[in-house]
Amino acid sequence: MTDAAYTPDHERGARIGLDEAVFCGSKSVPQISAILERESARGGRLLLTRLDAARFEALAPHARAALDYDPESATAVLGGWPEVAASGRVAVISAGTSDLGTAREAVRTLRLRGEQALEVHDVGVAGLWRVMKRIEELRTYPVLIVTAGMDAALPSVLGGLLPGVIIAVPTSAGYGVAAGGETALRAMLASCAPGVCVMNIDNGYGAACAALRVLAQLP
Image (cartoon, rainbow, N blue to C red; front, side, top):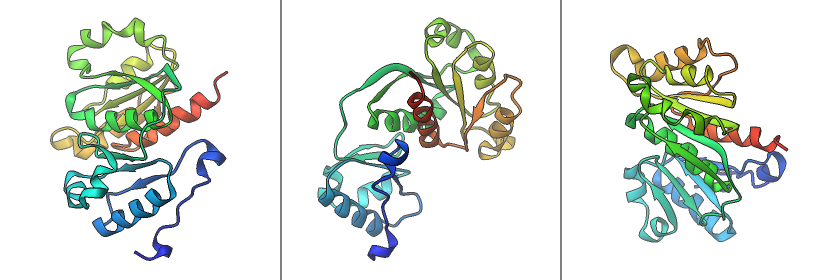
């Protein structure tokens, strides 16, 4: 890979409070390897997203050993984790197990910025009692990331019950007319709960960045 093919924005963190991440979904294994070599030599931390298992396994052994890899979220961290700086401010909620990868992408993105999120999983509206058991606990969180596919009703339900910022993430889970998450996206955009913010399909990383922007404005 030529130097011109990878021009990292190392000042992004200082500028906007969000460090650069590397999207691996459209990159070749040699490109990812070259990026890892450059960033390893520089030091510091780096988040890699959409690093599927096949690409990860194709990396050289020393490159794999340098990464904290999570196959569920298809994310990897180079350079280790920082200490937890804050907790009790973000809850990451998934409607079903099929939404877990997107939720975990958000959790790991937050954690790389020192933010320890509460995880609440498999509490979709098909069994509404599951989330209602946690509702008073969730009420204490200023920011909630909610991942859901299929009819994507969970963010609307929580948006009508909780005062915190709701960041809804449609996922591609579902049959037929779920259309790879497009139905969930439209349902969230059409939510009758006021003030629900909606991210792109399967974009747990983007949801975590939105949460971090909100948290940066809190006293």
